[in-house]
Amino acid sequence: MGPELGLRLTYLLKHALLEIEQLHRERLAPLGIGGRELAVLLFLAGREPGSQQQAAEGLGVDRTTMVALLDGLETKGLLSRRVDPDDRRRNVLEVTAAGRKTLRRGIRASDAAERQLLSGLDETEAAQLRALLGRLAGQ
Amino acid sequence: MGPELGLRLTYLLKHALLEIEQLHRERLAPLGIGGRELAVLLFLAGREPGSQQQAAEGLGVDRTTMVALLDGLETKGLLSRRVDPDDRRRNVLEVTAAGRKTLRRGIRASDAAERQLLSGLDETEAAQLRALLGRLAGQ
DNA sequence: TATTGTTATACTCTATAACTATA
DNA sequence: TATAGTTATAGAGTATAACAATA
Image (cartoon, rainbow over all chains, first blue to last red; front, side, top):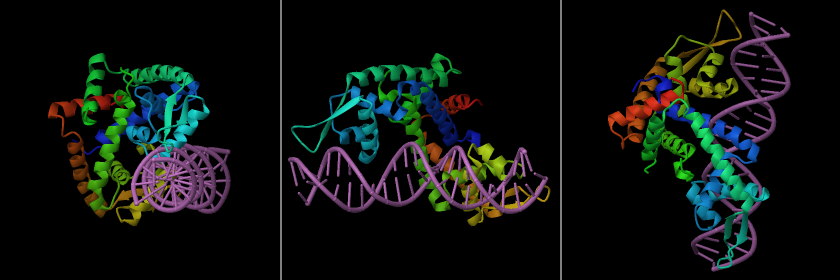
């Protein structure tokens, strides 16, 4: 574990994150969404309709942050909020048909961004990196 | 490459970065510096005295961002600015004796933070992760 | 004219506190 | 009283534009 800045884990992780975020910006721009919006669609599409609070917890963002994120997605017609009849304080979130279409295109764009970041690694190495990072995340 | 959010590379990288940043905050707090200040000290200590502009480029931050960072370090007595007599537009940056001491303690704190992040991996796996991330950064 | 450091300003992402409507 | 969504506000971190001093 050398002292050099370029060898510090924080530096290496930040470098990789900044690069993959830039690749996502480029590839998601034609779809009119950002990486955080893709993450919301990805999170919502895979489970039963839930509340904003549940989505915020699942995504690890504050519920106040979620409001603006959902405003954007709703304005673009990619998801809908409707009041939960069983608890009128809650909004039930549902991805629209347009949202599902954008999500499918977004996943392909994200896959391409990941492949580009990992283009210097072979299949085995890419899988190793993914597995090791997954274990840091406790998966 | 599955569609699930928790398997996306961006999610995994961000998770690891947030965690190691938190570990650094905890371990650097007693030293009175933040992770970005440690990075500046680390960058400056390893090379010939240089200008703010050179430091900004080397660290990958804007030169306007560097000003406030250096203000903090100078106030704490960890580095000094002096006008370059050969080009009076430039400030020559030098880490003080106190700065070098804080740097040594900071490196130990950062090493400990890295070990904690990687505590679920064995030595070989930790080295693999470091090497793979290094290759993404073009090293 | 161009460059270095600086300041003012703005934009993104994030969180805290307070409001409202519901429970 | 407590909870879900919302708004206002503020704090990091970042960048752009413009300024003074110097080249």
